[in-house]
Image: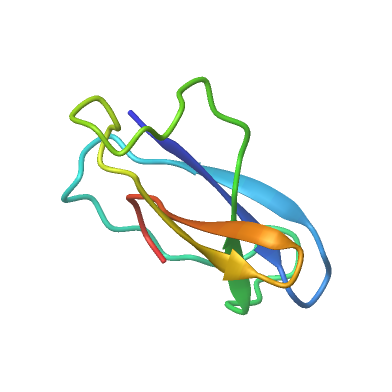
Length: 79
């Protein structure tokens, strides 16, 4: 059962939503101010994205940036 973290863009409150199945839907709104203007934040994880079969559905894309190399992670779950 994955737990996803979100941040309210109106009041800056952070909250979590627990999904019991991949097909479950939930109304994404802030519990503090009822705003629907929220964004998903990247939580700390206990797995690493390797791009192999053990990546739990996550994938990484590496590209060149002015500071060297940058990675973008595509993680499963609601957007």
